[in-house]
Length: 427
Image 1 (cartoon, rainbow, N blue to C red):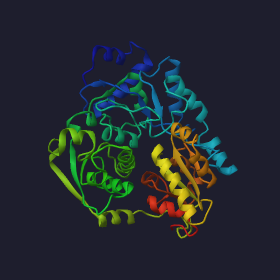
Image 2 (cartoon, rainbow, N blue to C red):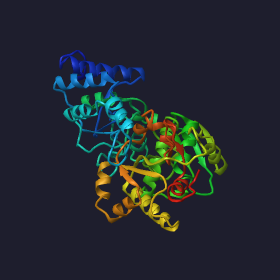
Image 3 (cartoon, rainbow, N blue to C red):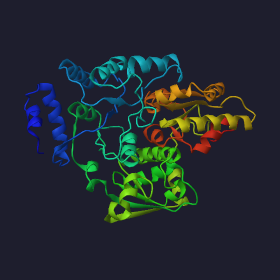
Image 4 (cartoon, rainbow, N blue to C red):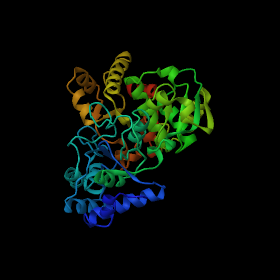
Protein backbone atom coordinates (compact mmCIF):
# COMPACT_ATOMS: atom_id res chain seq x y z
CA UNK A 1 0.00 0.00 0.00
CA UNK A 2 1.27 3.47 -0.87
CA UNK A 3 1.09 5.82 2.09
CA UNK A 4 1.35 9.59 2.18
CA UNK A 5 4.21 11.17 4.12
CA UNK A 6 1.85 11.98 7.00
CA UNK A 7 0.50 8.41 7.09
CA UNK A 8 4.03 7.01 7.05
CA UNK A 9 4.99 9.21 10.01
CA UNK A 10 2.06 7.84 12.00
CA UNK A 11 3.05 4.28 11.07
CA UNK A 12 6.65 4.98 12.12
CA UNK A 13 5.47 6.05 15.57
CA UNK A 14 6.11 9.79 15.26
CA UNK A 15 2.59 10.47 16.62
CA UNK A 16 2.87 7.96 19.44
CA UNK A 17 2.97 4.20 19.88
CA UNK A 18 -0.81 3.74 20.21
CA UNK A 19 -1.61 5.60 17.01
CA UNK A 20 1.15 3.65 15.25
CA UNK A 21 -0.47 0.35 16.27
CA UNK A 22 -3.83 1.57 15.03
CA UNK A 23 -2.32 2.59 11.70
CA UNK A 24 -0.45 -0.70 11.38
CA UNK A 25 -3.66 -2.66 11.95
CA UNK A 26 -5.60 -0.73 9.30
CA UNK A 27 -2.73 -0.89 6.79
CA UNK A 28 -2.20 -4.63 7.22
CA UNK A 29 -5.94 -5.18 6.87
CA UNK A 30 -5.89 -3.22 3.63
CA UNK A 31 -2.84 -5.11 2.39
CA UNK A 32 -4.70 -8.43 2.78
CA UNK A 33 -7.32 -7.21 0.31
CA UNK A 34 -4.89 -5.57 -2.08
CA UNK A 35 -5.77 -1.97 -1.19
CA UNK A 36 -3.56 0.48 -3.05
CA UNK A 37 -3.96 3.36 -0.62
CA UNK A 38 -5.94 4.88 2.23
CA UNK A 39 -8.77 7.30 1.47
CA UNK A 40 -10.38 9.91 3.67
CA UNK A 41 -13.66 9.21 5.45
CA UNK A 42 -16.23 11.86 4.56
CA UNK A 43 -19.05 11.10 6.99
CA UNK A 44 -19.67 10.07 10.61
CA UNK A 45 -18.86 6.50 11.59
CA UNK A 46 -21.08 3.75 12.96
CA UNK A 47 -19.72 1.06 15.30
CA UNK A 48 -21.05 -2.48 15.60
CA UNK A 49 -19.75 -3.25 19.08
CA UNK A 50 -22.29 -1.78 21.50
CA UNK A 51 -22.19 -4.37 24.25
CA UNK A 52 -19.98 -4.66 27.31
CA UNK A 53 -19.47 -8.43 27.38
CA UNK A 54 -17.04 -9.12 30.20
CA UNK A 55 -15.21 -11.83 28.24
CA UNK A 56 -13.90 -9.44 25.56
CA UNK A 57 -11.25 -7.98 27.86
CA UNK A 58 -8.90 -6.98 25.00
CA UNK A 59 -11.54 -4.52 23.72
CA UNK A 60 -11.73 -2.64 27.00
CA UNK A 61 -7.96 -2.73 27.42
CA UNK A 62 -7.46 -1.24 23.95
CA UNK A 63 -10.09 1.42 24.63
CA UNK A 64 -8.31 2.38 27.85
CA UNK A 65 -5.02 2.63 25.96
CA UNK A 66 -6.61 4.89 23.34
CA UNK A 67 -8.11 7.11 26.04
CA UNK A 68 -4.85 7.14 27.99
CA UNK A 69 -3.01 8.36 24.89
CA UNK A 70 -5.47 11.25 24.57
CA UNK A 71 -6.74 9.99 21.21
CA UNK A 72 -10.21 10.74 19.88
CA UNK A 73 -11.89 9.76 16.64
CA UNK A 74 -11.58 12.20 13.75
CA UNK A 75 -15.25 11.64 12.96
CA UNK A 76 -18.04 11.25 15.51
CA UNK A 77 -19.87 7.94 15.60
CA UNK A 78 -23.13 6.23 16.46
CA UNK A 79 -23.28 2.67 17.85
CA UNK A 80 -25.44 -0.43 17.56
CA UNK A 81 -28.29 -0.94 20.09
CA UNK A 82 -27.82 -1.55 23.79
CA UNK A 83 -28.22 -5.20 24.84
CA UNK A 84 -30.62 -4.81 27.78
CA UNK A 85 -33.78 -2.88 28.68
CA UNK A 86 -35.31 -4.12 31.94
CA UNK A 87 -38.17 -1.60 31.84
CA UNK A 88 -39.68 -2.69 28.53
CA UNK A 89 -38.20 -6.18 28.10
CA UNK A 90 -38.71 -7.60 31.56
CA UNK A 91 -37.00 -10.76 32.71
CA UNK A 92 -36.80 -12.82 35.89
CA UNK A 93 -34.11 -12.54 38.59
CA UNK A 94 -31.94 -15.30 37.11
CA UNK A 95 -31.96 -13.83 33.62
CA UNK A 96 -31.27 -10.38 35.04
CA UNK A 97 -28.33 -11.79 36.98
CA UNK A 98 -26.90 -13.39 33.84
CA UNK A 99 -27.38 -10.23 31.78
CA UNK A 100 -25.99 -7.74 34.31
CA UNK A 101 -23.36 -9.67 36.24
CA UNK A 102 -22.10 -12.20 33.72
CA UNK A 103 -22.83 -11.30 30.10
CA UNK A 104 -22.91 -7.50 29.98
CA UNK A 105 -21.04 -6.76 33.19
CA UNK A 106 -18.88 -4.09 31.52
CA UNK A 107 -21.73 -2.19 29.83
CA UNK A 108 -21.47 0.97 31.94
CA UNK A 109 -17.69 1.04 31.66
CA UNK A 110 -17.74 0.49 27.91
CA UNK A 111 -20.31 3.21 27.24
CA UNK A 112 -18.15 5.65 29.17
CA UNK A 113 -15.17 4.63 27.04
CA UNK A 114 -17.20 5.24 23.89
CA UNK A 115 -18.18 8.72 25.08
CA UNK A 116 -14.57 9.61 25.75
CA UNK A 117 -13.33 8.77 22.25
CA UNK A 118 -16.15 10.21 20.13
CA UNK A 119 -19.68 8.84 20.66
CA UNK A 120 -21.99 11.42 19.13
CA UNK A 121 -24.78 11.44 21.74
CA UNK A 122 -25.92 9.48 24.79
CA UNK A 123 -28.89 7.96 22.93
CA UNK A 124 -27.14 7.19 19.64
CA UNK A 125 -27.49 3.43 20.09
CA UNK A 126 -29.29 1.90 17.10
CA UNK A 127 -28.61 -0.31 14.09
CA UNK A 128 -30.60 2.12 11.89
CA UNK A 129 -28.37 5.16 12.34
CA UNK A 130 -29.28 6.36 8.84
CA UNK A 131 -32.92 7.16 9.72
CA UNK A 132 -34.00 10.80 9.57
CA UNK A 133 -34.58 10.92 13.34
CA UNK A 134 -31.04 9.71 14.13
CA UNK A 135 -29.38 11.92 11.51
CA UNK A 136 -26.32 9.81 10.70
CA UNK A 137 -27.36 9.74 7.05
CA UNK A 138 -24.58 9.78 4.45
CA UNK A 139 -25.10 11.06 0.93
CA UNK A 140 -24.27 9.42 -2.37
CA UNK A 141 -20.52 8.97 -2.80
CA UNK A 142 -19.61 9.44 0.89
CA UNK A 143 -16.78 7.20 2.14
CA UNK A 144 -17.68 5.39 5.38
CA UNK A 145 -16.12 3.16 8.03
CA UNK A 146 -19.27 1.42 9.28
CA UNK A 147 -19.38 -2.10 10.69
CA UNK A 148 -23.03 -3.14 11.10
CA UNK A 149 -23.97 -5.39 8.22
CA UNK A 150 -27.58 -4.17 7.85
CA UNK A 151 -26.46 -0.53 8.01
CA UNK A 152 -23.59 -1.06 5.57
CA UNK A 153 -25.80 -2.68 2.94
CA UNK A 154 -28.41 0.07 3.34
CA UNK A 155 -25.85 2.86 3.05
CA UNK A 156 -24.25 1.31 -0.03
CA UNK A 157 -27.45 0.36 -1.80
CA UNK A 158 -30.22 2.79 -0.84
CA UNK A 159 -28.07 5.86 -0.18
CA UNK A 160 -25.26 5.24 -2.68
CA UNK A 161 -22.52 5.77 -0.10
CA UNK A 162 -19.37 3.63 -0.19
CA UNK A 163 -18.38 1.26 2.59
CA UNK A 164 -16.86 -2.19 2.93
CA UNK A 165 -18.22 -4.73 5.39
CA UNK A 166 -15.83 -3.93 8.23
CA UNK A 167 -15.54 -5.80 11.50
CA UNK A 168 -15.64 -4.51 15.05
CA UNK A 169 -12.55 -2.51 16.11
CA UNK A 170 -11.60 -1.79 12.49
CA UNK A 171 -14.51 0.65 12.53
CA UNK A 172 -13.10 2.37 15.63
CA UNK A 173 -9.54 2.40 14.29
CA UNK A 174 -10.64 3.85 10.95
CA UNK A 175 -12.74 6.51 12.68
CA UNK A 176 -9.68 7.50 14.73
CA UNK A 177 -7.48 7.77 11.66
CA UNK A 178 -10.23 9.33 9.55
CA UNK A 179 -9.22 6.94 6.76
CA UNK A 180 -10.03 3.51 5.33
CA UNK A 181 -8.24 1.19 2.87
CA UNK A 182 -9.34 1.68 -0.72
CA UNK A 183 -10.63 -1.62 -2.12
CA UNK A 184 -13.79 -3.61 -2.72
CA UNK A 185 -17.05 -1.68 -2.47
CA UNK A 186 -15.19 1.64 -2.35
CA UNK A 187 -14.10 1.18 -5.97
CA UNK A 188 -16.17 1.53 -9.15
CA UNK A 189 -15.28 -1.98 -10.27
CA UNK A 190 -16.11 -3.47 -6.87
CA UNK A 191 -19.65 -2.09 -7.11
CA UNK A 192 -20.51 -3.89 -10.33
CA UNK A 193 -22.99 -6.77 -10.14
CA UNK A 194 -21.98 -10.43 -10.29
CA UNK A 195 -25.60 -11.60 -10.49
CA UNK A 196 -28.82 -10.60 -12.21
CA UNK A 197 -31.82 -11.48 -10.05
CA UNK A 198 -35.05 -11.77 -12.02
CA UNK A 199 -38.08 -11.34 -9.74
CA UNK A 200 -41.07 -13.03 -11.39
CA UNK A 201 -43.54 -13.21 -8.53
CA UNK A 202 -47.26 -12.50 -8.75
CA UNK A 203 -47.16 -9.91 -5.96
CA UNK A 204 -44.67 -7.91 -3.90
CA UNK A 205 -42.50 -10.54 -2.19
CA UNK A 206 -42.06 -10.57 1.58
CA UNK A 207 -38.93 -8.42 1.98
CA UNK A 208 -37.34 -10.74 4.53
CA UNK A 209 -37.84 -13.87 2.43
CA UNK A 210 -36.73 -12.31 -0.87
CA UNK A 211 -33.60 -10.95 0.82
CA UNK A 212 -32.95 -14.34 2.36
CA UNK A 213 -33.26 -16.13 -0.98
CA UNK A 214 -30.83 -13.73 -2.64
CA UNK A 215 -28.34 -13.78 0.24
CA UNK A 216 -28.28 -17.58 0.34
CA UNK A 217 -27.65 -17.72 -3.41
CA UNK A 218 -25.12 -14.94 -4.07
CA UNK A 219 -23.36 -14.88 -0.66
CA UNK A 220 -20.88 -11.93 -0.73
CA UNK A 221 -21.43 -11.05 -4.40
CA UNK A 222 -23.29 -7.98 -5.69
CA UNK A 223 -26.80 -8.67 -7.08
CA UNK A 224 -28.67 -6.50 -9.60
CA UNK A 225 -32.40 -7.06 -9.06
CA UNK A 226 -34.80 -6.75 -11.98
CA UNK A 227 -38.60 -6.82 -11.63
CA UNK A 228 -38.93 -5.54 -8.07
CA UNK A 229 -39.44 -1.97 -9.23
CA UNK A 230 -42.79 -2.91 -10.78
CA UNK A 231 -44.07 -3.40 -7.21
CA UNK A 232 -42.12 -0.65 -5.44
CA UNK A 233 -42.21 1.96 -8.20
CA UNK A 234 -39.38 4.28 -9.15
CA UNK A 235 -39.35 6.60 -6.15
CA UNK A 236 -37.42 6.04 -2.93
CA UNK A 237 -40.27 7.02 -0.62
CA UNK A 238 -40.76 5.84 2.98
CA UNK A 239 -42.41 2.59 1.93
CA UNK A 240 -39.66 1.70 -0.53
CA UNK A 241 -36.90 2.57 1.96
CA UNK A 242 -38.53 0.53 4.73
CA UNK A 243 -38.92 -2.44 2.41
CA UNK A 244 -35.30 -2.22 1.24
CA UNK A 245 -34.07 -1.83 4.83
CA UNK A 246 -35.50 -5.21 5.79
CA UNK A 247 -34.70 -6.79 2.43
CA UNK A 248 -31.07 -5.70 2.68
CA UNK A 249 -30.67 -6.91 6.25
CA UNK A 250 -31.77 -10.39 5.14
CA UNK A 251 -29.32 -10.41 2.21
CA UNK A 252 -26.52 -9.40 4.57
CA UNK A 253 -27.31 -11.93 7.32
CA UNK A 254 -28.47 -14.93 5.27
CA UNK A 255 -25.53 -14.29 2.98
CA UNK A 256 -22.85 -11.61 3.15
CA UNK A 257 -24.18 -9.01 0.72
CA UNK A 258 -22.75 -5.53 1.20
CA UNK A 259 -24.37 -3.90 -1.84
CA UNK A 260 -27.32 -4.55 -4.12
CA UNK A 261 -28.85 -2.61 -7.00
CA UNK A 262 -32.60 -2.42 -7.70
CA UNK A 263 -33.32 -1.67 -11.33
CA UNK A 264 -34.96 1.75 -11.77
CA UNK A 265 -34.96 2.52 -8.04
CA UNK A 266 -31.64 2.62 -6.14
CA UNK A 267 -29.34 5.58 -6.89
CA UNK A 268 -26.62 3.88 -8.91
CA UNK A 269 -29.10 1.75 -10.86
CA UNK A 270 -30.92 4.94 -11.82
CA UNK A 271 -27.74 6.84 -12.67
CA UNK A 272 -25.80 4.15 -14.55
CA UNK A 273 -28.34 1.49 -15.53
CA UNK A 274 -28.09 -2.25 -15.95
CA UNK A 275 -25.75 -2.16 -18.93
CA UNK A 276 -23.02 -0.32 -17.04
CA UNK A 277 -23.46 -1.94 -13.62
CA UNK A 278 -23.74 -5.63 -14.54
CA UNK A 279 -20.58 -7.60 -15.37
CA UNK A 280 -20.44 -9.39 -18.71
CA UNK A 281 -20.19 -12.83 -17.07
CA UNK A 282 -22.95 -12.24 -14.51
CA UNK A 283 -24.97 -15.26 -13.38
CA UNK A 284 -28.78 -15.28 -13.41
CA UNK A 285 -31.13 -16.33 -10.58
CA UNK A 286 -34.88 -16.42 -11.23
CA UNK A 287 -37.17 -16.00 -8.23
CA UNK A 288 -40.87 -16.84 -8.52
CA UNK A 289 -43.56 -17.64 -5.96
CA UNK A 290 -42.52 -21.30 -5.76
CA UNK A 291 -38.87 -20.39 -5.10
CA UNK A 292 -39.81 -18.05 -2.26
CA UNK A 293 -42.02 -20.74 -0.73
CA UNK A 294 -39.16 -23.25 -1.01
CA UNK A 295 -36.76 -20.90 0.77
CA UNK A 296 -39.23 -20.09 3.56
CA UNK A 297 -40.02 -23.77 4.11
CA UNK A 298 -36.30 -24.55 4.41
CA UNK A 299 -35.93 -22.60 7.66
CA UNK A 300 -35.38 -25.00 10.56
CA UNK A 301 -37.61 -24.79 13.63
CA UNK A 302 -35.28 -24.82 16.63
CA UNK A 303 -37.82 -24.58 19.44
CA UNK A 304 -37.66 -27.57 21.78
CA UNK A 305 -41.46 -27.79 21.84
CA UNK A 306 -42.24 -26.71 18.33
CA UNK A 307 -45.93 -27.54 18.62
CA UNK A 308 -46.46 -24.97 21.38
CA UNK A 309 -47.19 -21.27 21.00
CA UNK A 310 -44.55 -18.56 21.19
CA UNK A 311 -43.66 -17.10 24.58
CA UNK A 312 -42.19 -13.85 23.25
CA UNK A 313 -42.38 -11.92 19.96
CA UNK A 314 -39.76 -9.50 18.67
CA UNK A 315 -40.71 -7.12 15.85
CA UNK A 316 -37.94 -4.91 14.50
CA UNK A 317 -34.49 -6.25 13.66
CA UNK A 318 -33.15 -3.99 12.22
CA UNK A 319 -34.90 -1.33 14.28
CA UNK A 320 -38.26 -0.16 12.94
CA UNK A 321 -38.57 3.17 11.19
CA UNK A 322 -41.13 5.65 12.48
CA UNK A 323 -43.52 4.74 9.66
CA UNK A 324 -43.13 1.03 10.38
CA UNK A 325 -43.72 1.60 14.08
CA UNK A 326 -46.92 3.53 13.36
CA UNK A 327 -48.10 0.86 10.94
CA UNK A 328 -47.45 -1.98 13.38
CA UNK A 329 -49.18 -0.11 16.20
CA UNK A 330 -52.28 0.52 14.10
CA UNK A 331 -52.31 -3.04 12.79
CA UNK A 332 -52.07 -4.55 16.28
CA UNK A 333 -54.80 -2.30 17.69
CA UNK A 334 -57.15 -2.92 14.76
CA UNK A 335 -56.53 -6.68 14.63
CA UNK A 336 -57.22 -7.06 18.35
CA UNK A 337 -60.41 -5.06 17.99
CA UNK A 338 -61.50 -7.20 15.03
CA UNK A 339 -60.93 -10.34 17.11
CA UNK A 340 -62.76 -8.96 20.16
CA UNK A 341 -59.57 -8.78 22.23
CA UNK A 342 -57.95 -6.03 24.26
CA UNK A 343 -54.50 -7.51 24.92
CA UNK A 344 -51.85 -9.13 22.76
CA UNK A 345 -51.80 -12.90 23.19
CA UNK A 346 -48.01 -13.14 23.18
CA UNK A 347 -45.65 -10.78 24.99
CA UNK A 348 -44.73 -8.45 22.15
CA UNK A 349 -41.73 -6.13 21.87
CA UNK A 350 -41.41 -3.64 19.02
CA UNK A 351 -37.84 -2.34 18.74
CA UNK A 352 -36.77 1.01 17.32
CA UNK A 353 -34.07 3.63 17.83
CA UNK A 354 -34.18 5.80 20.98
CA UNK A 355 -34.83 8.85 18.77
CA UNK A 356 -37.81 7.25 17.03
CA UNK A 357 -39.09 5.89 20.34
CA UNK A 358 -38.95 9.35 21.96
CA UNK A 359 -40.89 10.83 19.05
CA UNK A 360 -43.48 8.06 19.12
CA UNK A 361 -44.01 8.31 22.89
CA UNK A 362 -45.45 11.80 22.42
CA UNK A 363 -48.38 10.48 20.36
CA UNK A 364 -51.82 9.17 21.31
CA UNK A 365 -51.09 6.10 19.23
CA UNK A 366 -48.27 5.15 21.61
CA UNK A 367 -50.62 5.21 24.59
CA UNK A 368 -53.17 3.13 22.68
CA UNK A 369 -50.49 0.58 21.80
CA UNK A 370 -49.26 0.30 25.38
CA UNK A 371 -52.80 -0.48 26.53
CA UNK A 372 -52.66 -3.64 24.41
CA UNK A 373 -49.73 -4.94 26.46
CA UNK A 374 -47.21 -4.48 23.66
CA UNK A 375 -44.02 -2.61 24.52
CA UNK A 376 -41.60 -0.41 22.59
CA UNK A 377 -37.88 -0.82 23.26
CA UNK A 378 -34.53 0.18 21.79
CA UNK A 379 -32.92 -3.11 22.73
CA UNK A 380 -30.99 -5.34 20.34
CA UNK A 381 -33.11 -8.52 20.14
CA UNK A 382 -30.09 -10.56 19.14
CA UNK A 383 -28.19 -9.51 22.25
CA UNK A 384 -31.20 -10.61 24.31
CA UNK A 385 -31.21 -14.06 22.72
CA UNK A 386 -27.50 -14.49 23.46
CA UNK A 387 -28.49 -15.17 27.05
CA UNK A 388 -28.40 -19.00 27.22
CA UNK A 389 -31.59 -19.12 29.29
CA UNK A 390 -33.57 -16.32 27.66
CA UNK A 391 -32.52 -17.51 24.22
CA UNK A 392 -34.06 -20.94 24.81
CA UNK A 393 -37.53 -19.48 25.11
CA UNK A 394 -39.94 -19.90 22.20
CA UNK A 395 -39.24 -16.58 20.52
CA UNK A 396 -41.13 -15.53 17.39
CA UNK A 397 -39.74 -12.94 15.02
CA UNK A 398 -40.54 -11.28 11.72
CA UNK A 399 -36.80 -10.72 11.21
CA UNK A 400 -34.76 -13.10 9.06
CA UNK A 401 -31.62 -11.70 10.65
CA UNK A 402 -32.74 -12.65 14.16
CA UNK A 403 -33.88 -16.05 12.88
CA UNK A 404 -30.45 -16.65 11.39
CA UNK A 405 -28.45 -15.73 14.49
CA UNK A 406 -30.64 -17.32 17.16
CA UNK A 407 -33.14 -20.14 17.74
CA UNK A 408 -36.01 -17.74 17.07
CA UNK A 409 -38.74 -18.86 14.67
CA UNK A 410 -39.53 -16.79 11.60
CA UNK A 411 -43.03 -15.53 10.77
CA UNK A 412 -44.05 -13.24 7.94
CA UNK A 413 -45.57 -9.90 8.93
CA UNK A 414 -49.10 -11.23 8.37
CA UNK A 415 -48.36 -14.39 10.35
CA UNK A 416 -46.85 -12.36 13.17
CA UNK A 417 -49.93 -10.17 13.38
CA UNK A 418 -52.12 -13.25 13.62
CA UNK A 419 -49.81 -14.78 16.21
CA UNK A 420 -49.96 -11.90 18.65
CA UNK A 421 -53.53 -10.74 18.04
CA UNK A 422 -55.65 -13.90 18.03
CA UNK A 423 -56.43 -16.57 20.61
CA UNK A 424 -55.50 -19.39 18.28
CA UNK A 425 -52.46 -17.61 16.83
CA UNK A 426 -50.22 -18.74 14.02
CA UNK A 427 -48.25 -21.86 14.93
